Structure formats: C-alpha cells, structure tokens
Length: 161
Image 1 (cartoon, one colour):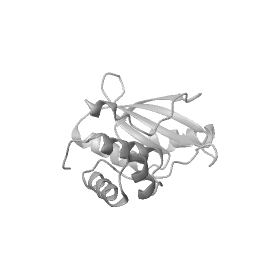
Image 2 (image 1 turned 90 degrees about the vertical axis):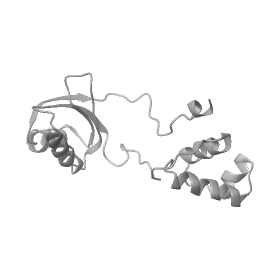
Image 3 (image 1 turned 180 degrees about the vertical axis):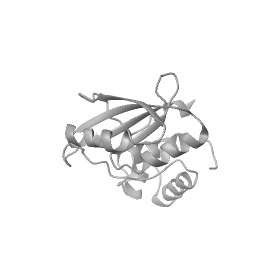
Image 4 (image 1 turned 30 degrees about the vertical axis):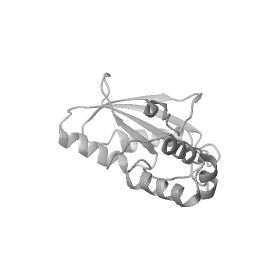
C-alpha cells in the first residue's frame, strides 16, 4: 500500500465516506469545495492507496433476528504459528463469528465477537463447534447486555498534526 500525506480535503472526504458511502461524487465534491472531477480523482487515489478497505452496508442485528452478542475469550493449549493459523482458519468459517482478535495481556489468546439469535443457538455453537476446535484449552463467554458505543467511523484527527 502506498502511503501519501493526507491533507484536510482528503481527511474530509474519508470522513464523509465513513458517514455514508452512498454519497455521490458530486455531493462529496460540494461538501469539500472541489469540482466533481478532481474530487473523483482524490477518491480513486485514496482507494488505490488502501485507505478505503471496503464499502459495506451495516445491518441492524436485532432487526434481522440476531439480538444476542457474546464476547468469547478462548485460550489455546499452545501458541505455535501452526496452532494459531489452524484456530483462525476454523473460526473464520463460523458464520456467527463477526470478529476475531489475537490478544495479549490476558489469560485468553483470542477474543471473538459472536452474534446469535438466542441462548440455545449459542449453546449449540459452543458445544458443537467452539469446544471441538483442536487445541482449545478454555472458553469464557461474556454476554453483552448493552452497547453504549457503536462506531464504524474512525477518528482522523490525529492525521491533522
């Protein structure tokens, strides 16, 4: 990924795209004070430089029948590269796993963000899938009661320095 210095206009374009990726080039151009053609070139450069990883639609999990979020802390018996790769490949195939983090500073090796329709579904996932993964030593499940912060847009303030 090539990296170039982001100016104020680039940062504003990225902020607007994070808020609503469906904005037209004309709308973005108007809000950043450019004409459409140079704005389009900037967006293309930002995409080509890897600043835009992908564009997605974020669904409301409760509205699609997935109201339960579980943070699952998993410890492995060994942390070799092979065991880590194998674990990551296995959990990446589970549709309920939305995010997977290899972590440090805890007794767990991984934290998974899992979404499920209900406790019975999670129990089946836990018993039939997660505990069956080779090399798993322990699993601790934390059920999310409420999510007071839910952001998808990154702050770009630190890039202004």
